[in-house]
Each structure stands twice: as C-alpha cells, then as structure tokens.
Length: 120
Image (tube, helix red, strand yellow):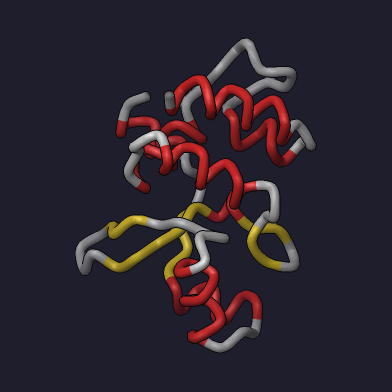
C-alpha cells in the first residue's frame, strides 16, 4: 500500500459538499465521521477534511465500509493508510480494480478477509 494510491480516488468531498449533496445537517455529517461510518483526510490548500466520493452512494455512507475501517484501524493503520489500501489495485479480487470496487460490487466478506490479513 502506498500513499500514491490516494491518486486513484476519483473525487474528494468536503464536509460542506456532503451537507449539500445529502441535505443533512453538518452535525449529522460530523457524526458519520465520529461513528466511523466514513473516514477522511485533510487535503488541499486549506487542509479541509475530505472523504472519497466512492465511500458513499445515493443515500449516504456505504454500510459495508464501517467494519472494514474497523478491522484495518485495529490493525494499526491510519485513516490515510486505510484509504490508500482500499484504492490500491488488486488483480486477485473477484472484480477488476481495488478493494473499494469489490465492496461496491457486493464482495464485502472477501474484502474484510483480506483486510484482516493485511492488518495483522
């Protein structure tokens, strides 16, 4: 896993972007982060907290990610390392792309198994 895998993120959303996109209050968006339904890193000129757009669907945070975040964090990974791991290309997955693509395609269990191996 390399931080350069962060370059694979198609779009980053700041907290105000999330508020606007989902029509939620800022406190709700912050709770998503506090509850680890989402993770983000500080990026850009103003070091605004941002999350990868792939972590969300039309209703909000992808439920399948929360457990994966927990497994990787319990293994000692920082949020930046977790995001990089989720976006690192892996040709051995059941779908083309990276672990985030496999999660979005419904392969949460396979990704979590690999997360446990990577984290410990």
